[in-house]
Length: 85
Image (cartoon, helix red, strand yellow):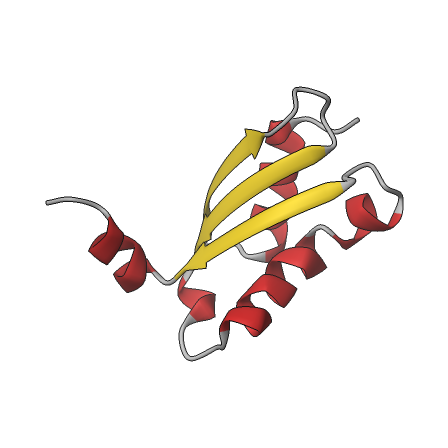
């Protein structure tokens, strides 16, 4: 089991400018949804953005501390466009 705070810390360690929201989907500490906003996603395809997030969580994923992960990624500009003014 891994806490939402640990998931966030791992993502920020891999993507230092990231703003991260973590949601535990089942309450069991192994199924998460993450929303990550980072300037490092600029110019990258969606799959490349997700690979950066998975890379930051590689150890937790490989040990199955995280069993399932839903990922949403945004550049800061794209994130701003999704939030109402």
